[in-house]
Length: 256
Image (tube, rainbow, N blue to C red):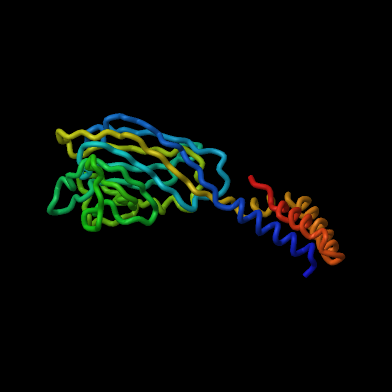
């Protein structure tokens, strides 16, 4: 294999590595609004629009901070709609955590400050595994979405989890992301959405990445010329070795 061909292949590989997965964040969306107590006819919703993200979703995380109330009353979902407002993917983050045949109202812990990820432990049954409450009585940690796409009045721990965050993997992230919440317990203890945020990891299509790598070919051609000059100088004598090494250290792909 020729040295030029080797450099071209290295150029493509290096570009793909550096221009691969990228993280996009909504930043912290501070609300401070009360979550309505209802049977679904009233809800609190907030939206954030991502645009111009190349590639598909490979990972995501949703941070949700809710103060007060009871976790067993909370219902919430995350919905992605495309640019034409057509629903694309929905995940049920919360659906009456702890509710089962023996516990109609679910868990009574006060609020949560958690991160939802595609493959975390089931938050609906968090008291069946090690868990932690902070000084405010909020559930903390990293969890998987509830995923039970049932009406909150009927949700049970035994129900199938069909609306998880992994449903977003492979989807186009561009569009409107909506968080919606309500409290189905209708108790005297009210909940407040303190803040929420969304982080998406996306990877460009391979054709896009290769096209970008090809744009670097002039740079790598220059690199090849300098490497050849450096090798010739080192073969002629060691007096240029330090200068050549310093030049070689600077021959790195440009940072995006």
